[in-house]
Length: 356
Image 1 (tube, helix red, strand yellow):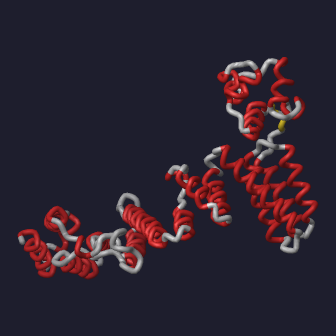
Image 2 (image 1 turned 60 degrees about the vertical axis):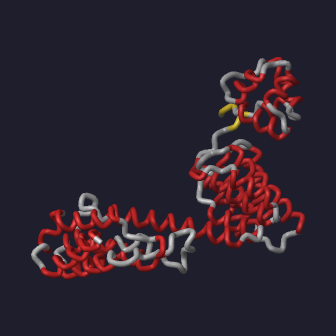
Image 3 (image 1 turned 90 degrees about the vertical axis):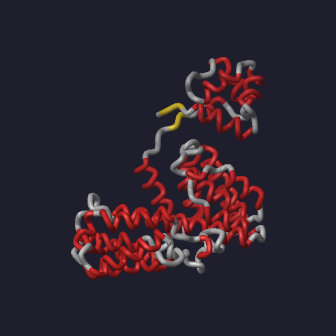
């Protein structure tokens, strides 16, 4: 059994809309004292328990309620039982069981998060329920999600934000949805879809599309980076597997066309390591041909020019051309090809492009 006094004070104080300073003033103590109570660094003097309970609109018994920890295994078992009740059509019994748990463990965030899913099950499995029941479930779900959000537990916070924003959008509360999204840090979750839905609700279709396209462009680049890392000889010495991963990267490039065609040089290196000279030469020749013209733009079907530059903005600059030429002339991996006429011809083609 564990005393959860600090969390209880925070919960009741916020429910009343009081600040620490206001609660402190009502009790004749300092705000730092209230802060210590809420962090369980210290406890209120026994003579303050009754005034504290009255100030928070509760009683001393509720204020000092001891809470037994609910283990992850116990929570899982309880939720399984509730879901089985719902599936069996025993909705009132399931609701009573769920509310009993929430009453017994009022500060348990994993329980509150799981309860949201259970309430969604109520809605799905009881379409014939009274409107009053549906409204009660909806309101309770919103309260639980808000409690999870306000707790700030990083394991549940992104999902809570997503749910609150979705609820706000469904009720056309666009300002609330935007506020929630803006107050959320980028590293706390990916809210691309929700931003796009907000823009659509506001009639800003171009912004919605641009938001999705920018995220897609970033994800494709991230995938390319991961696949190229997996092709490294230290990470993946199995050449057959490396060739298969190379094929996956080629498929990705052929669909999205992100990378400007630079992948051809990498493909050639992998095939060369695998002893596939003909394939390696073919990719190097294609790379040399690409370098005599504009850099390949990303797929215009998927990316607008402002998301990924169009062909008129994509050029092979001198640094890229010189780096490619230097690699072909000096890297040991290309040594088996250097006496071949096709290789010499493509090197000369790139050299002329550097000198032009």
